[in-house]
Amino acid sequence: MKNLNRKFFPLLALVMCCGASLPNIAAAQQQVAAQNESASTLEIQISSSLKDNGKFLTFGQGSLYLSLIFRNVSAKPVQLLEEWNSWGFNNIHLEITAINGKTLPQPLVIKKAARQSWLENRLSTETLAPNQSMVREIRLHVPAIIRHPDTPPTEDEVREDNENLASMQRNEYWFFLFSTGYGTKTITMKAVYEVSQEKRRPDAWTGRIESPLLTYEVSRYTFGY
Image (cartoon, rainbow, N blue to C red; front, side, top):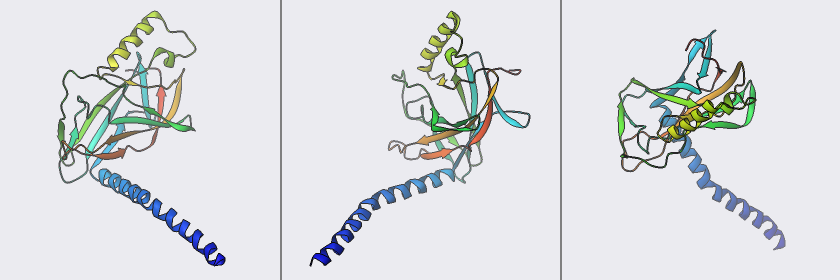
């Protein structure tokens, strides 16, 4: 009997362990399937300037501008949440995974500043027809202490930063907490667009898609802009 128990209880523990993990495995499989389905309907990429056959991003006067290109790659129209309301306001973020070729321990996530109040707020979408593309602009504010961390900010820069921080609450700016110092650095970055299921608009696109993970040169100078 003792020998039987020695064989039975480890087996029972294994079955219970595997059984408990089955829902987690199923949930993970569903998530992967949903992401694959999302990627089959919509694509996103970061648009940047080309310089010396490389992708190049610049910032001057305290801001960095990016354009995100959405493209409907399916055979049916896609309904995208509009950005002006709380449902579509904060569905995009950027992830920096490496700086100057050195992989970061954790990705640097860049997103819009939180917004607490809305003068008007209702759920709305815009239609993206098959094969149609749409551009959404991003303006990233770079505080003076990030632009030149070794030099105290001037009064004008402090005032500008304070004004921009207030403007972020009005849906105009994103934080870009990355110091380029002087000269040019490289960053490896991707854009992520993620929308959760919305019961009030079941026709709205939901899922998660990512732009290709690419390396960009980033400079604090404007180079003709």
